[in-house]
Amino acid sequence: MPELASGEVLIRVRAAGVNALDWKVREGLLKSRPYAFPIIPGWEAAGEVVSTGEGVTGFTPGMRVMAFTKKPVFQWGACAEYVSVPAEQVAPTPSHLDDVEAASLPVAGLTAWQSLVEFARLEAGQTVLIHAAAGGVGSWAVGIARQRGATVIGTARPENADYVRGLGASAVVDYRAADVKEQIMALAPDGVDVVLDAVGGEALRLSYEVIKPGGAIVGLVDAPDHDQCAHKDLSATRLMVCPDNGQMAELAALVAEGKIPLPEIRTMPLEDIAEAHRLSEAGHVRGKLVLTVF
Ligand SMILES: NC(=O)c1ccc[n+]([C@@H]2O[C@H](COP(=O)([O-])OP(=O)(O)OC[C@H]3O[C@@H](n4cnc5c(N)ncnc54)[C@H](OP(=O)(O)O)[C@@H]3O)[C@@H](O)[C@H]2O)c1
Image (cartoon, rainbow, N blue to C red; front, side, top):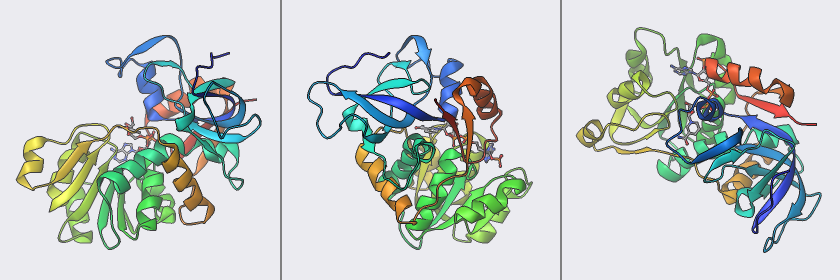
């Protein structure tokens, strides 16, 4: 049972989302950040409030909540029966979302939101290129971009093209094609306004060629190159997602209103977490993987 510090909420976890970040932590790829063993993986959960620490208001036992469970030190994660989380990282789960759906939102949803809405300030009429549009972040990003009135070009394999179009993309480009750049330029002859890159490497390099001068570029994996960005006067960032319960509530409300679709969700029992990590690490999860906890 995790300890409950002041300002925290103890949650009985019913569902925990799996993110690519989880296997990266497990592999030690993020070990420059503080951690302590034993480590329970998982950065997002949905379930019910069990109890609250000193100073917490607004949460009562039994209340259904979703949470972005990341703490400054990687240790007590969401893939467990219980997790304790600072209250400002917890939001009520709206009645129209079940726990599995709610657990698909905090990390991938907020990453997409902070990239497109907060940083890039994506507007109606703009065109956005989303690399890895079929993944967890990509699925949320396509829906958020459409909701803001933008035209979406996504990259994915052809077997995911219908899925990505179903989320609201106007066009889907196979990133393995020899003429990816030409296909994107044919779709956006003046260049795209915004790029969300959830892939890095070659995808990021291609982005400098297809973005308009003055555009905005968000790298989730690799940091955008300073010289390339200066050359085109791009605003650019290597974004690291932050917990924000106000944004979680806002995004959940847009889902409730039918304005943003949920990603496709595949569930697996918590016991199968090793297999879930293998699938995530293989790099072709469509939508979100969510572990159910009984
Ligand atoms: N910096 C941050 O704060 C932050 C936050 C969240 C995630 N991330 C990072 O962002 C990346 C995406 O995260 P995620 O949770 O969305 O991962 P994910 O759900 O596991 O992404 C899987 C998707 O990636 C697609 N994909 C794989 N290789 C691709 C390529 N070369 N071009 C285009 N699409 C490709 C796959 O589509 P196909 O099957 O069609 O290939 C699949 O749908 C991860 O590296 C993660 O660590 C960073």
